[in-house]
Image (cartoon, rainbow, N blue to C red; front, side, top):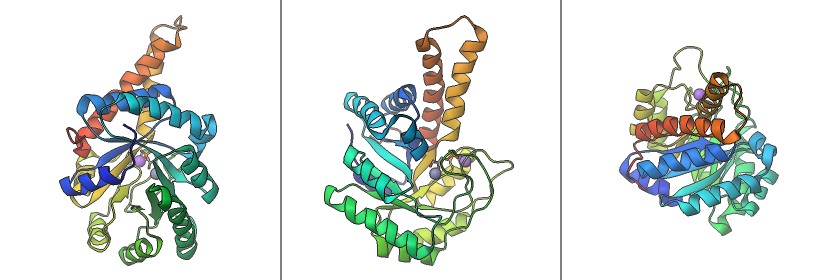
Length: 282
Ligand code: 13P
Ligand code: ZN
Ligand code: NA
């Protein structure tokens, strides 16, 4: 069923596990993520960034998610990832997305607060939860290339930010980056614990691709409730497709290589659901 993340996160906080949020780009990736969730009886979040939304439209992705969610027994949420403006957040709300991120992390503290608060106020009447971000996750979030430049979240500021905006969940910067990492990422676990002490809303980890599974598990023990994965799903999908096309260049049926991409994404997502501890939590 298509649901919001409210109940999902409440259960995850109580049960000390996280829900995986997987960026999807096409129908096969939606199918892959939902099949994984169904087979492992796991709650799941599908999400699309603004550049993905631009490719086919909010309505097109939501329609895919709805069909998948209606067929599924597990709870499925459809989330706008890195919502880049008030306007896009409102369009996602009107379209029927069940969770919305407004990303004001590139603006000043005060501007981030007023933007996030405006989105929260607009989403409140329909009970749609809002994720905001404080601090800078490394890399470019939209096309998800790894890169440098991150400002870690200040715990006191996080507390003030959540109180003043009323956001439902908070994405924090503790050393993760979008895309793959050049070396081992250095994750500031103590900072996460400090934030967790001061902030009671669910905490979100961006930049999941490339982080060792053991590190992800430790962040969940310390309070992370949502883990985002994007780049590695793209890699999995493309590798699956490429394998079929390179083994048999005569293939012309999109179902053949689409299926291979799907299977490859599905097995990646299953692995990460195990890492998140969300299996059998639906
Ligand atoms: P990765 O591409 O590093 O998995 O980051 C995902 C993400 O944070 C999407 O918002
Ligand atoms: Zn992100
Ligand atoms: Na990453």
